[in-house]
Image 1 (spheres, each protein chain N blue to C red):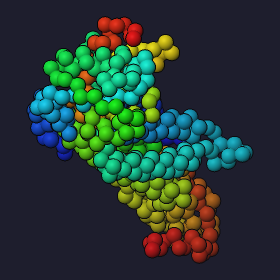
Image 2: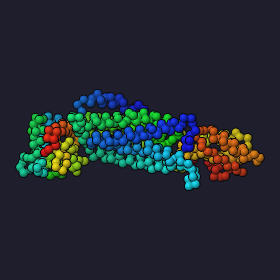
Image 3: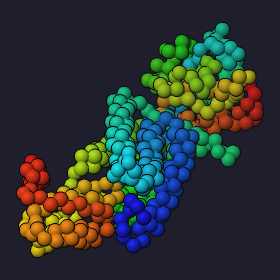
Image 4: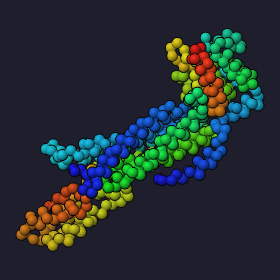
Length: 322
Length: 155
């Protein structure tokens, strides 16, 4: 199948990931509706609701990206559509950061103005109960399944090498912490500490800013063809080194510079090779390209450019970044 | 990620959570000690008529019944909306009446109660309260919701 790593079971995983995304979307929508009704004057719940709206972005981007990203290349888009999602991802990450900053400001102002959150009664089933209890129930409803969804998404993201899915999983995991903070805020207000609510809101907004900042960095790096990073570890992928070693081990190769970039869920590599032979060169190149692709299921294509000497610009790719 | 660092905190909070919510500025305690409900009113007939020093109308009647139920008397304070809301925010008043509905511009400054009546235009009428005095507000919300039910929303 086009656009996913050639790992056994990847197609089934992709199908599962799509289901997870749909479940998340349905789930988040239900939470938003409930939060809307029980929000009352709580800043923490308001912040949590904004967080829920933001968590709709990654699963939606994942589904759209999956649909567009696997289209076949054509004359207009000769390299295919894999990058479609990277573009949207930059926007989503910036939005995350912006909303986090707004909520931090909003919560800090409430603290500074000493605003006491009003959380009164809520009529339900013929009784009037404290709205704070309902808020806590909704927070539990939203966060406990999100925790398990997040774990499932993480493992799928690793195999599929899907950034959007990985970010989605991270946000689900963080949801659990922000919901816990909001619960403590509400209980604090219940105990008569008016500031607990806004303080929890500030904590949650800091978490949104933190994840927004890391998403912005990842998203910009992707667009700039940074060397591939591990989906979860965010450390350098070993694929470029493995390719370099592979080419070095070929008898006909005198020197080589390998450059790898991520295109959606896949890698494409370019190798500038200084050959030591002239005969059968084309055959050797074709054979090496095929063999190179087998090194990692995520390698979709390896292009080999035979050169007399490594061009200066390409040569610089060996230098560490300053 | 995974197990929340706050888990023990939540447990402690849950154990101590009987009798929630409390009033940060101790309105309920104040009420129990002084037996005095401090109510601001501003004229807006037929809800509240401010022709005399003691207001009359639909809302003052409800307030009197609430006070009777709580075993306290009402100390009335007349004034403009702006003055009264300022006093609410400074916790010098417990309650303000004057024909406010749920969409009142004061909802970000003062607390608002559950509705006790629905008028001909479908507007839900509420009282303004001292912000964040959640135990007092919950008590009032219970009373007003009963009021709404027994009158079937008619005023």
